[in-house]
Length: 405
Image (cartoon, rainbow, N blue to C red; front, side):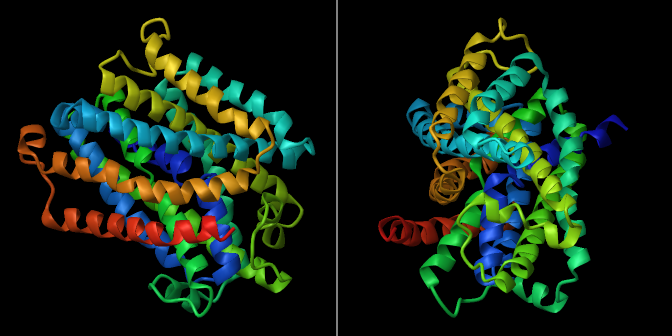
């Protein structure tokens, strides 16, 4: 029974890292601008993420290394420092967006500007990390995050044309504004396949002390946990496609517009359920990102690390997530638009994917670390194809979107 309860690690990774401000914003923009046409990006990204998360758990179980440990040990400190610097920049941008998402959820519930909530939210994230344990965070976020199933309920209430929804799962070319279409596709892939997700998951496997009897549980956890997030993201695209275009909205410019997405299906309660979903999922993502940053830094430099240990036992680990939270809250407290930070950070995440994924693939094919549990050719091919696609699209479309305003 205990092993089956560990499936919550996949749910918390999914709720805290899959369905959060990035996935909500990019999915809503995709549905508003292109209807069901970009569902394929979520499906593709989810398939890749399932493979990567399963690989990260298999690597940690077989080698007793986390991914950060493995990169430093296999490739040396120079490559590790490069990976750390790039991932830190991306993580801090995304962490800022997640703190902004929690603050916006509180703004919708109270009417007070998100700026006023930024510091209390940051303090709450830090306090839970300082006083809590990995199990508390894992079980708590996965349980509370189930409120996000409201998006799936609302989708069925709206009754979409299912044949068109299914057609959207197949890649297609847009009939207008190709650069914007590609940019949103890149942003969805960036929101879905974030490197910190599988780095975090491998650390969670070590924290939970999974042994070689957990290979099957790991596969189930990765599959169902990430599929859970994928279904929610598809539901948001479907809802956005049905809610916004009839109201003449094809370009989402603020979270105020996204907040109304559940109202047509769930009535007046929709805004409150959306606000709570945004608040909980983004809070989980903020916890996960802060921990991921502390994990990769401490593991790479050989410091003591564990969320279950007292801060005085691993002070450097605790200092890293404290500094990360302080830096990330600054732009939100200063009033920068969380939606703009979110969309840009998701595209930059897609550009950074090869740096985190390719060394990991080498590790997964090295018998020195994983023994007989190396990757098959199909797993390698799937990951390389999707990461290459995301990187190529990002190289082309991100400059167009940034320089084009």
